[in-house]
Length: 229
Image 1: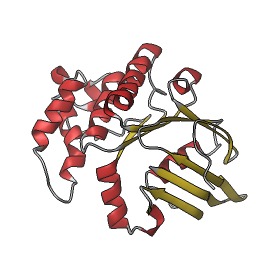
Image 2: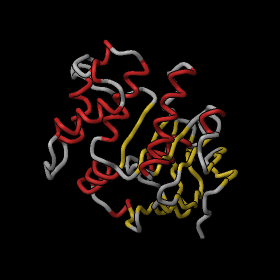
Image 3: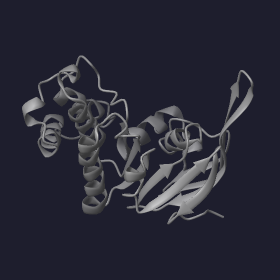
Image 4: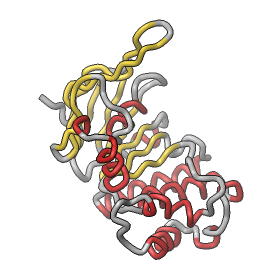
């Protein structure tokens, strides 16, 4: 599904260049569950955002089904993100003045083809994630666990091939974290969706079938992930 070839991402900082990723080469196969670990500043989130087409590498190539993301213009990158990728973030990123149901519908409303019955699909996802009695609530009226489930329903709204999760349990207590991890595991095992999850939690990292560990932007270790080239 994803192939990274010598991907480097550098930023100009106040004290010189910051190398978030350095010559990262790997392949993530369709249907895999990959956890990405490493200390703060090791490049974990940069790797995830690069896979999501939100960051362009300074050098190297990122391919999705053999299509180089760096060759796409902004319009086609936006279409890729909206149709193929679902994002789940630690901060939830829900729109505060929209209800839970309306938040789930947002990605569908942004689809260029306008396909599908948005309301029906959103209701199905709300019910599936146990939020039926909260669908008319605003984010501030929901618990952290409920907000994260809304965010996951939103990520699934356009039926993406891959879920990119950045510390999805970081703001949750252990019980709620376990619920979110079970949902991600079920999406992978029962529906065959590819999941790439960044986490600091050793417990969360263990649910991945494949693991990538980053240090200072380098892939220091890989378990079950192909090294490209």
